[in-house]
Length: 346
Ligand code: PHE
Image 1 (cartoon, rainbow, N blue to C red):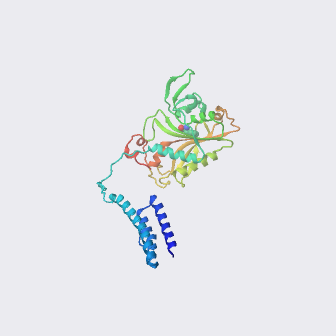
Image 2: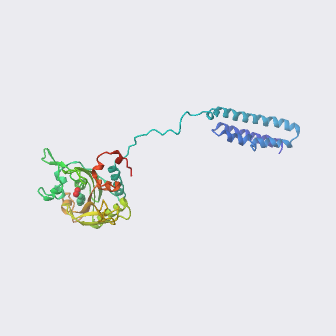
Image 3: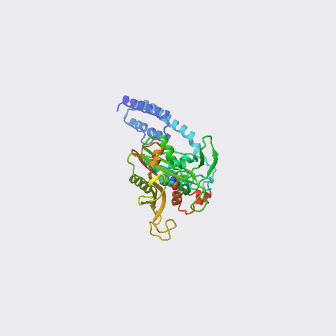
């Protein structure tokens, strides 16, 4: 290397140092890179050994000038930050932390959210209906004629409220009126779920309450059959309770479906093997919901031609699912606001 090359290298190093020093680079890195044991400038200065004395003196002066500049830059930065090292925080990290009252969703809401998620995956959308409902939507349009004995299946809170059109109002006894409201509002195909509170004039016990939550589901299109209903409910149950869940149907009566069925899910607790199982009592099956193929009169009441369209519908109590998730056998536990229950996030 001749002196010109040496000078050029020194210039490159000075240039590199300048740009690093203007950025936020770590000081120890900078120090090591340029003036450390194997630093670029250290190695360059070592090359001076092979130069003639006059050259060595001249170049050495230039090289040392840059070295001093870098060293003092690094020292000044280190002094700037060194104060932090000596600072001691005056805290005791072994103290227990403050307790916060963390809130969480109510078990019924968590259960409902899970149910909604599953049906949304299956392509269902959500509709909401009013809690104060007209007799027409709650009963009549669902094929309960005014004096039909099937009305007695649902003890009703009638409201002493008449509007100018002389309509009868009540607290809805089920979420099924949303079937009617949705079919009047939209054109088929419809794939809808509708959750919400329902009311029945009943005494409270471990499995009954005057207000509880239901979720309605229905699908109306061409060629919808009982087979679609069964597949949909089975897919739902498997997703909710696990892939080993099975369902079975048995005949049941609701005026707005024909045929009507009651669906049971295989006992997720004992699988039917435990005679003393608190949930299925050894039968292996748990009653979960009412369902069926929409009655032609219901379709007609909504202006749908029953020869062209058909549908299925089901209605389930949300508390029932929450009780199975929590493993409790008394519904009242869900309404008593005992924090030991409410805090069981599952
Ligand atoms: N609405 C019925 C009930 O509350 C349940 C149901 C819904 C049955 C849809 C059939 C079809 O008992």
